[in-house]
Image (cartoon, rainbow, N blue to C red):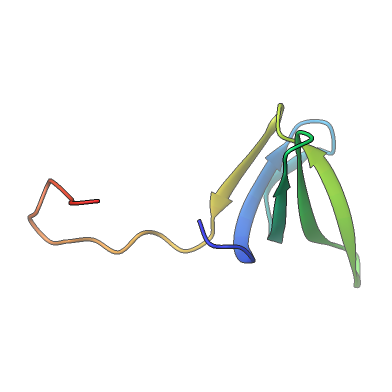
Length: 71
């Protein structure tokens, strides 16, 4: 996943279920750094990697009928 990237965020601690945000960085100390909208403002938040799911907002492009990908 490229950074920065628009993501959907799931985090039980904050009660987030598919909240839209921007992934800024994945810190080696064990947290995601994200921009997240609260009301009319955007705030920088640090969420622990453990207990947080980050999903790219845009799906991966499909390759038609091809089932194997070269990497």
